[in-house]
Image (cartoon, rainbow, N blue to C red; front, side, top):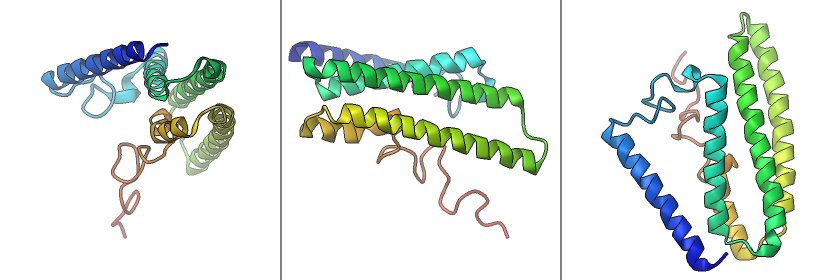
Length: 182
């Protein structure tokens, strides 16, 4: 793809994102019911809505990453495999979230710990699969592309510098949960 085409696509994505953000702010920060200030957040979404939103978010983030990387035709095969792996990861995440919500809150501390243990094992497997997909794709990148990938992968859940950390949404605050209780 020519550089001017990529630049045009990137400018279009930025314009659409800015337009959407401006519209959300004009509506008082309501972003369609998901996230802080929304109408019920993720818990109010049906499993299908949740899966659609996650898929849309991952698709957008992958499109941005692809533009930023300026891939060569020789890298497209590896990119497509990586993109498929990230899409499958998003589907699994949405399914797991839906299953957990449908199961309801655990009744006892033992049930809660059992669920946490099962979720931890599933997360460990997911991270190993993600790492393998990243390693396969990362090996095809130039040094400059690796720097871009390293900086931008956090948006896909890589939890790098722009991933979850203190003060970011969904992350524990300084002192952790229940800080200050005695």
